[in-house]
Length: 478
Ligand SMILES: [Zn+2]
Image (cartoon, rainbow, N blue to C red; front, top):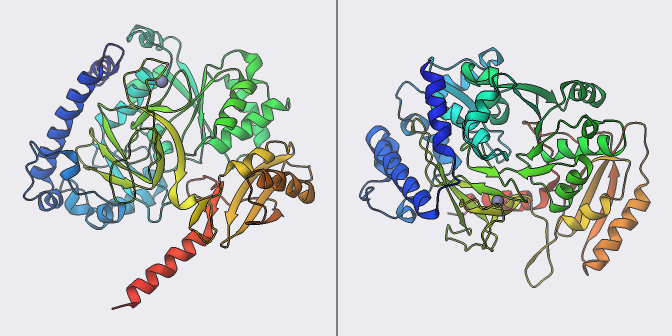
């Protein structure tokens, strides 16, 4: 019985509509100091790292940052429960039968995809696990009244469809595997997988009549095409209330198009396995609001210097304020984020992320002799919106000026590579890049998905090969 009461209290505390910036800042400060004190007391790693720093008063910027490699190399010293060992946890997640069972009867375990190199293990306690759902209830939907409407959910459970990957220990899948049992009467979850045939997914969705659909941008766009071309009729059921994009950047164009197709708001969430409640999608427009009472998001340049709102950073530093068992403090993530410089139309007092443009290493660029110049993804994306028989795409930079555009046709359809090349070149010319870049079109039956089921729409193999070469050169020089 304690579970539901605690959940109700958590939920109550999360409604930010009477909050102002000062109250959010105070909450953030209080939780940050508690986290730092706990980390220094219980983690030998943080005790060593923070030695000589006055953690009761220091500015956040005085604390050293944490890379994923640091965290994984020092895992056993970093966690605050000495029973947690990296080797045991790795063995635990390697066995799919463990999914959904609490480690040591207390902890949910997940691992990130490793799309940025090695995977990271994440351990959270049950309070952190239920917080994911409380935040979703309180901040990610238009429901503004406090928890009475949620009690109604016991009679009329919310219907959520989640289209991510096959069940596994990936954060977005693991979160659902660890739904606290007392919450399960409040919502029904339909889990769909990319690897199942689309016709089956459509049938299951139509029967389920979801109110909320959550998925990766590529999955949502695939569903959008089915709906737009009449093979699926979700809009007609009238049950759909909101669509939420997670884990892959969604372009403005694609978001607006999905809204036209489905007739509901498309929210955009920015989070990661290391901090599942980092933000909630804005309920009125594009972008997401940082849950600044539960996490700190610093947008910085490549030397960890702060970047002002309105300017795109080259990475972010994330501090998770609610995970005390695995403290994650100023954790470096290679995402390019732009914070908004103006208040949001939805009136949320939480800081707004205006743009999420993905991973730094996935940016496309050319070197025109005077330095690097970015080649925006939309140069390729906008013309592809005109190709109706297209199922999936990927842009790969393979040389200093060479780009491969990989295209998968819808089942039973053909793609005219020459025509698509002409369409793209029209846009390339409009950007003044026609003499700078070479494009090759490849029509393929399938694009391999990464370990977590995401498709990298943009991949810079050339940048990766360059940085590998640089690393070898550096390690070879004395
Ligand atoms: Zn907003």
